[in-house]
Image (cartoon, rainbow, N blue to C red; front, top):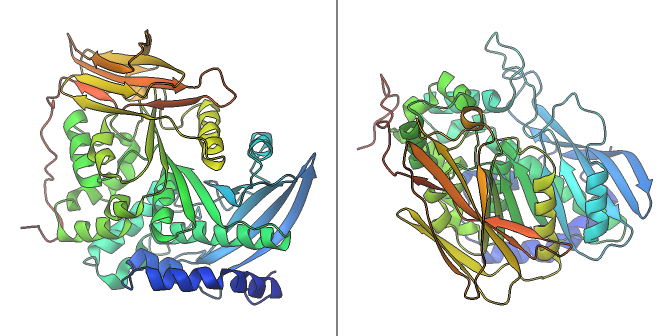
Length: 472
């Protein structure tokens, strides 16, 4: 077991000292609760290299990392969180930035989780590719209830319920699983840097990507650690959660079965309370949006079971800095297949090699999508559209894979106005642009989704009994 006070750690700390001094002098003294939690190093952090693998022009490490305790032995059966950190280092390493995937899995996993695709990714980009698994650490058993083996949203929602019922006091922040989830990603970056330093290669920054809850952790990691220089949050289309979920209910007349855990704990009945505002203030990425100045590639499913297809409207315009969007037609929350990974690989390759990302912009006004593409770029453009004659509902299990593609003839000016009209029911549409389609690194981006007509079929959610201290 490698302890925090090993010679390797001392070298690592000396290497980082100038960066730490600079960071402390330049950032605000007032840290958020999440930042305070993550920046507190505890004695229960450690790691051990369990295995090494090698192949043609690459080497890999299978590392067991203990990121720290969450709760204690009186509250959960396994308070000490551990994770696999798998690291692929190409023999030809040209970059000091590493790609870190935030992965799921369980504490029953043992095998190396990165596959040949990730190896190829590392060789092509000449960069370190890594993954931290078991975010959140699961399953766990809460000791004050009979239910066994909490996973995913059930694990998270249980803690939210505890926090809200405590009056959302600062002393109860420890119930929020987003805190140790974020800490685990940050500690994984520490491990990756340290192991690469031992191999005489320096990693000083990270491009972080993750899907669903791991996408949320991608946002929160970027909010607390300056080593994050680019992010790809995937299928977590819920920033600015309060208006976003008002929209959700007004579209469906229900909360989607995909978010049933939060309904079961009556989290939605707290949404107009001061306690819920406190919860959102400390864990919701939208509240840290000013920190997201790094390049962002947001990948969403156009038929997500969790989120409404036009949820981008509640956060997109408010995100600062470079940002790119991709809605994947005919895809649910799982984003079936490897197609999206290849697209992310193209984005990351451009990012690493300082290749200009596509120069274009779009906006939606009433029932028209306006697209402007700067001249001199090679691209293909198409409209994707789907109709639901009965409901404002485009979830994959409602409409299937019925999005239809219609190519748009390119013009020399690069200006397009694409109308969207629904003769019956509701129509959803988006414009997709494939940049450099004939190159080795084509990149697919899209506009946000437009839904027509705008009218909601349902009123806002009103609980039978509101919980918490009502906002004025």
